Image 1 (tube, rainbow, N blue to C red):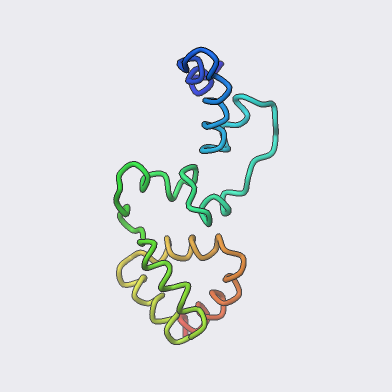
Image 2: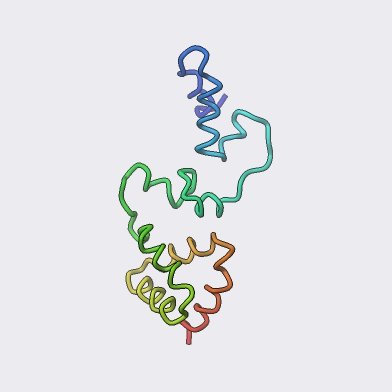
Length: 128
């Protein structure tokens, strides 16, 4: 049994299954430790849903800070709101590029299927 699987053994009597369930819900990639499965959730969905199991979100849950090169949820919401105005959206992308947060922003946007085409169009105009 892996170290992760051993965590459940520290639970009070009768609570091992609940601990396994909680760990699996929080961190779906460890599901294979407890259940023999080959599939796993899409990491884009974890990021989109701000799940602790997302590599991009994990530090935020424990550091209570925005990592260097990252963007706040407020800023991300402003970028999403600007999608209807190409000029405003391009301006937001330029601001992110200046602050060296563009890579993180594009990763977050790419995790949302509904905004991929808007982003592609705006990036084309940004490159001009």
